[in-house]
Length: 118
Image 1 (tube, rainbow, N blue to C red):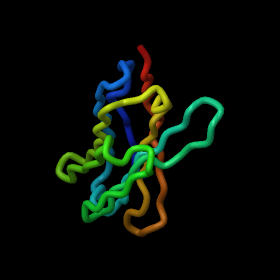
Image 2 (cartoon, helix red, strand yellow):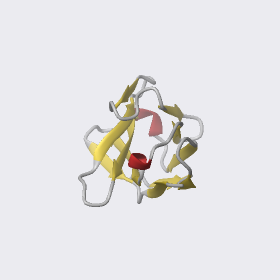
Image 3 (tube, rainbow, N blue to C red):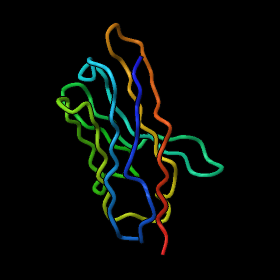
Image 4 (spheres, rainbow, N blue to C red):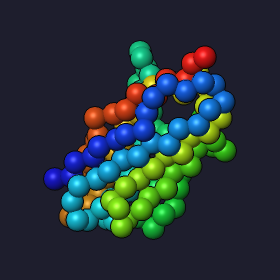
């Protein structure tokens, strides 16, 4: 069982930055593909970014050039640096862990609210 705890959300003005963190419990963090997803009111949850066990990152078009996902396996933590934020980035952001040993696990955090508004 893996528990994921997100932090770093909040209210920011358009053009501002936030860094989200997701701390994972357990000893096999390095075997999980980690991801950030978001869900805006009235919309489906959507992919923001993922990072593989070897550090390869993938981004949705909405965040390319503005968002950076990274992981620190020594700290069991994945980060999402968000720059040049727009009002349409407003959503609850969720951390996801997929894989592990044995493979096939899928865990979600409780989410952290990001609001971009002047």
